Length: 102
Image 1 (cartoon, rainbow, N blue to C red):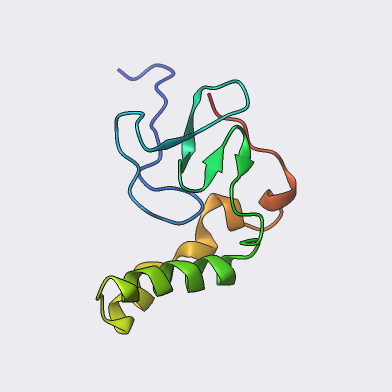
Image 2 (cartoon, rainbow, N blue to C red):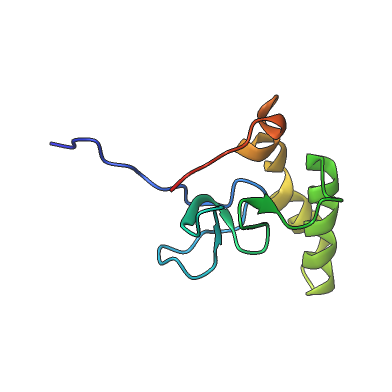
């Protein structure tokens, strides 16, 4: 029987990369706790690091560019980034609401 069990997100809810089960690689909240939603490349001290990436389209372009620079074919980069607009950070209205997850 599962009682009040919190199931962590498997992927960063900003860029879609796999979130590691251990805390290394996870972002931090304002109180220093580890985020259950965002990775350390996106989120530190309760804020998104790169304020210029403020739309899902900009995030897709950034991630596609990084993947292609590492030698991934453009079609695969497109496939891996197609769901970014559906992540919690980019969901309608969520950008204006501060998210706190301890």
